[in-house]
Image (cartoon, rainbow, N blue to C red):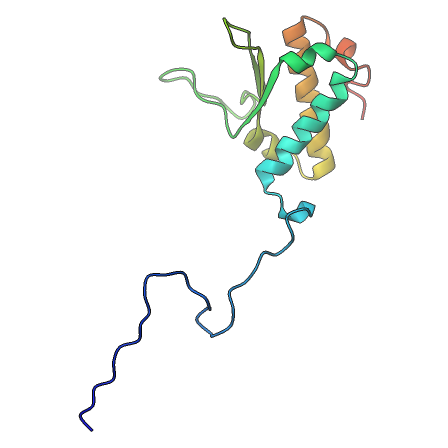
Amino acid sequence: MDTPVPPSAAGPGPRRRDRHGRGMRGPIAPPQVPLAASRAEAFADLVQDSVERLERRWPQLAEIDFLVLEVPRLGGAGEGWNDESVPLGGTIAAREGQPARVVIYRRPVEIRTKGRDERAALVHEIVVEQVAELLGLTPETVDPRYGED
């Protein structure tokens, strides 16, 4: 009766089962299904769709980098925004060896929209406005459907 029971050999390796003895859960959806895309990936797809739509008319957009950042940075100490002045996008002019850039801020855009269609429309408006600023044109010149619902 004094036979000691050796401790179980649960090492630091990967768990093969969950605590109930069943297998670990797999992914909810396969990677090729839109459900599997993260919010950031879905937003980047909206920006890319808008850019591709404009590139058909303006081939020089291929030389511009389009970036998606989470939120804009504050410029300096004591500088802040109120609810109406948080930027949704911005431009960075071309410098030596670096192309011009258009930046779209994901979180401020997501906060201002309710659904995917509304978000896609706002993203396209922002992209058109920023491209127009870089090219020195009006947004209506860049996209004749600008401002239409």
